[in-house]
Image (cartoon, rainbow, N blue to C red; front, side, top):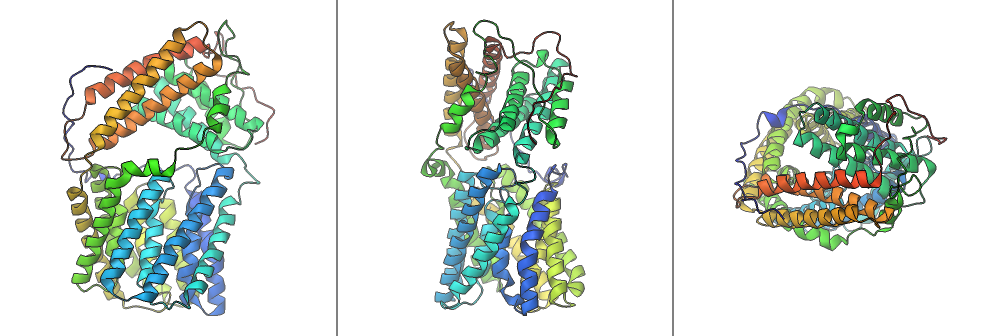
Amino acid sequence: MSSATPTPARVRRLPVVGALRLGRPSDVWFKPALSVVAAVAPPSLLLVALGRLDLAAYTMAGSLCALYAHHRPYAARAKVLAWVVLGMLGGLAVALVTASLTRNAVVLVTVGALLAAVQKAVCDATRVGPPAHVILTFVSSATLFVPQTLGQVPGHLALAAAAGAWAWLVGMAPAPLRPHGPERRATAQALHTAAAYAETARGGEESAGARSAAYAAVHAAWQTLLAARNRPSTTRRALERLVVRAEVALAAPADTDPARLRAWADAVRGSGRVPRTGDPRRDEGSLGERDELVGVAAERAVAPRPLWSRLGPLAPLAVRTALGCALAGYVSLALGADRPYWALVTAASLYQANLTLTCSRAVQRVVGNLVGVLLFAAVTPVARLGPLALVLCILACNFGAEALIGRNYWLGSVCVTPLALLVTELPGYQPTGELVTDRVVDTLVGALVGFAAALAVTDRRAGRRVERALTAVDRARERAARLAAGPASTPAALEAARRGLAAAVVDLRATADAAAGEWWQRALPQERVVLAEQAAHRTLAATVRRQGLLPGPGTTSTQTHTEDTSP
């Protein structure tokens, strides 16, 4: 481990302007947008036909599960969506039973805050998202303040379960047409970011940010491919070879042709056959094509870490969520609000990996909600033309929210806010001025109180997590270097060591970035992190050369032969 002197963490300025900057839309922004419309529309229109639009809030709870798991392979998506539906039903059941047993607003806010903390911790630990816990918290918190009787609970849960089952079918519907779509997109992203990094490195302007982004994209591609734990198909094996090529480009950018990587990425993103990467060298001790993916099968067989071990580091975040949501709800009640869950949900939506990101989210939430109430006031006359018009406005807001939120959270909130306000009108119309005023007040209360709670509950473990990540990188680097230098190292051991070191580097960068965004903590070993990353990248390059994965001389960017695989 490097003995470089730790340097103080960089002072972070409050992100205000940067928090509102628009980014590029996701390549598949239309998938969640269309999915949520397809999931919400049939149950809602059926209730319109039956004259029971007052029950649409319960069906919408299940329908919103269609927002999840669009980046996962379909085999994994089926399980994740099922767990999301069950989690939604669990939170909804607790809320409905609590609402039927008491009308004490303080008790209801307390239960809502505890549910929000549990939902936040579990979603972060299992990496379910986007939209992670926010939708689940909105559903459970809103239903806490809807009058219930115990006899109504089973029927309302049945409606949500039926809509959730329909949302599961909507989420799985593209599988027969494009069975490897998520894997293709992740692989294409890895190839594109690797090409961008190779260009900067070959031009003598190597960027640490570009390198970290490329390693993160490659790691995400492996996670996507490994998430499909069923027997690998020919197409998936071809995609795995392409991700190997992206890894090679990161380790040896000077020997990489960025144009060829981009050509592969463009071909993969479509629906045609998967490009062939070309055989690696077969020198003595090199990794042949058959042995190239020996580490993949081993990784696929490894069971994920137990949930409890992933929940431990999230304790400060869970405490922030519980405290912030509870205090926001109590302050809203003290101000005479009829819907304190708006303040509660606002606070719950703020909490990110660190305080800097939480501050950014607070700015985005306030700006988006303030613009959103103006949009609500504009669409209210149309929505009140009748039940069908109300449902159509809700569908339009659902589509707009998912279509825009990828550009920036505040832009999506512009549509989320009128959506939440329109949902309150499902049982009956409410005074527009009162709704707008209450929403503005609760947004400001939730943002201010929620952020104050984040300041009060500091994450003192951030520095220790960086130290552990540094130790993990050093150990992985030493193992990879030892195997790369050993003449008798097996292809499987080399591949496992290389991928283990790459994953450790990605985790170190994510941990260091998260810790740097925490305030009021001791200085972080920033210099040691940089030195550890540099040493790890040199070892990765040496391992790649030892494996013989670099393309042979004479290859060109036009070599994009195809595998005989199905799309």
